[in-house]
Image (cartoon, rainbow, N blue to C red; front, side, top):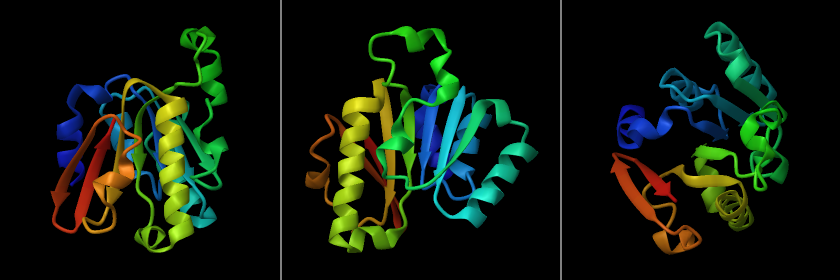
Length: 173
């Protein structure tokens, strides 16, 4: 599935600033860095998993291009402009907060079963697109094929879904 994801994204990864929410051990964001992304912020709540993620970042030697952030992946703080990007020339632009070129969102499947959590995920995605996504950005959401209906993603101007066995990748723009 990861190969299909990056095949679909193609050249959009090159130079991208990536936000990897519910990052786990970082496989998706690290793959983006290996394919030419310029920066990746990994957000993972679980301390043990986050330590493994930090170890993976170090082992791959991408610490200068990565930031491992602890806490709630749905909190506004997780989406804010990373401090290390503030010094970039583009940060002087009027709308510098629109820093995300590619967002990889892989919430745990149980999130979709609990109404309040479902609402939080959808609200965070809408906020990410409206306030933090750079022009031409793509958000890739991973769900089970039956967990989400396209109508729930109406905040996106473009929606594409691709199924891979028991997984669905939603490409939101």
